[in-house]
Image 1 (cartoon, rainbow, N blue to C red):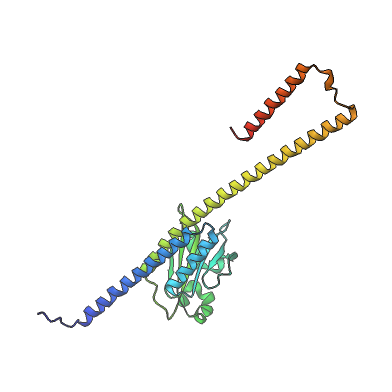
Image 2 (cartoon, rainbow, N blue to C red):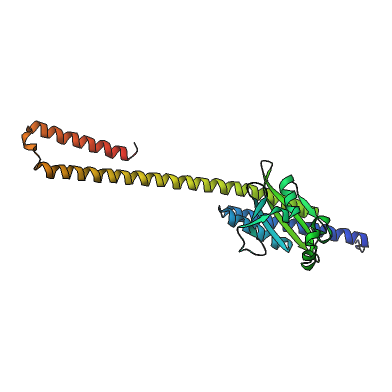
Length: 261
């Protein structure tokens, strides 16, 4: 019988690191599953983005997680989803106030600032970052066809867990899923708008038909009242029968056309 020997300090540390890595991977996988469920249950992009921001915030215990979409002109972005304040849905942000966000949007590359309070590019908000106990800032662009159409902004607490390279890689995967979800939502909304336009065109055509028939009825009624009784008695019996037959054929043709045949 072999008696297990006690682990050395180095072995115990290595085993603890492996367990922590497995736990991190499990957390990432569960978050991806939840995000995919969120994406698949809604085709409205605001709801999709809010669900993604919430899930990222909960997964990493973030101080802030926001999702921005690009505005025309490139000088501003629109805050459309926020973990810390879900009521914010449509707020225009000047990129000059957020150099890290501006850099990610312009370069299409992830920006990672491990020590935000002491970063030279953020010295204009150093006091706020210290008061909020901010540790790191990560901005991952949301790209479509090599162009940045938005960004995911994440901010960690100073006394919270470290945001690792693996975590950044995971958020990049989420950004890719977000871009595809936005594309699908855009296609859906465009298709829905096309259907609405078609329905509106059909409704206008129906109103035009009703108005034309109403006009013809009134015109013929007014003409009959002016001329007196219709002088159909002057026509021969054969002519009257032929008129009835032609009216029947015309109505049959109209009914078939209405069926779209």
